[in-house]
Image (tube, rainbow, N blue to C red; front, side, top):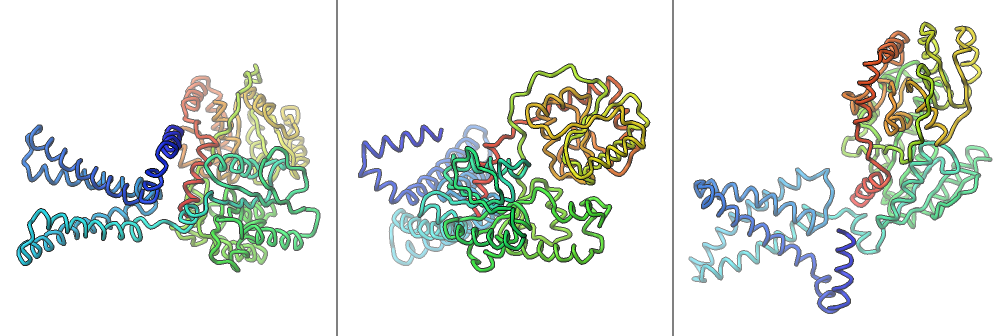
Length: 530
């Protein structure tokens, strides 16, 4: 439809350039009149239909027609006339819109009385005069109060495309979810009329990006890296409408410092993980999941990081989370205002699934960076008493040797196979060749591995400490990451053929259509109303 609309505009501007320029100049007023006229027509049509066709008493018909016309008028004025696509204040706007309409009703009656009774003006002319006066007043109230455009959207209207600086810690050829996320936005947002630049840490060559990427080398001390990153963001912030930072520390802190000196700069933060909790768990500072971590007393290092967290969060205009679960944790423990937070769901991967291999009917797959919080050791303990189960562990990391030694102590080394990290489609083949995939992390906010399994239609057991428990509570089977017995019981449950087939059917019926275009569109709508 958008292509047809643009084609018609181009044709009309070529065929009737003078009329087109006049319409463009006064299009807001024209759309305002059309919207009001449409609502009035809906009111009359509904009044007629309810009264003459359905036989409803005319006063009740008038009330019903008024309600319908009100919603038609509000929707047209908000979304079409004033192009206010934001949803966060819609109920407040609707209330104000209703109040303005009610006040207009009384003012119209009072004005009509004075014009007709005191000044002897013909009632039809008096109505035209009052309609024009109230219409002008309402237009100004709608334009500058109820449907007032945000600064970013207004600037975009004056200067053209929305300019977004994505500040990320990693970017391809670096491997990882945040790198892929940033690359998707880099590729998709320009399709919606945005200009994008990237600021990142990295030393590898950027391949096939098509956008300006500014790199800060990691081969220097942390102070030099942060200062150079700060300076790069500082220079690019003069170009950008919005700075979009993808964490709270490595890029969030330099961006918040820039915002400190440029308070009018729009800063949005995306949180797909929790740097401090991950650091604390892997270093042994805590043994709690993320949902309980912020209840505990903190050591000196943690307190320093919490100061950084609070500083960056306080300087941000909006904070994007990938799950409501993490959003509520930050609102509860870090006192983030709900008015500053929004959830934008992650997407399912897009790929052509490889042909499913015959595989091992009793093999369970574990994949990810081999670190403590991934909780693979507890799975080893759980399957010790399941001699029919084999494990395939895919990944690399500091816990690799410890896991190999644990397998030896548990005498299951002949049932555990380690493989280095695999990319697609090799990883997809291993997933499809397994009986079951486990995501047993102590906390996993929005695990990509689970989304990949769902896209492939492959059964997966998911930690209950994460953002998917509320979202997919009816579809997925969740495990207690602190209980070896619970992990083992869930595996045994799926060893039953009927249970396994039912779970497989449920997973295959899930909607996995959310894609990169949806992600970009959600971000674009968010940015333009920031």
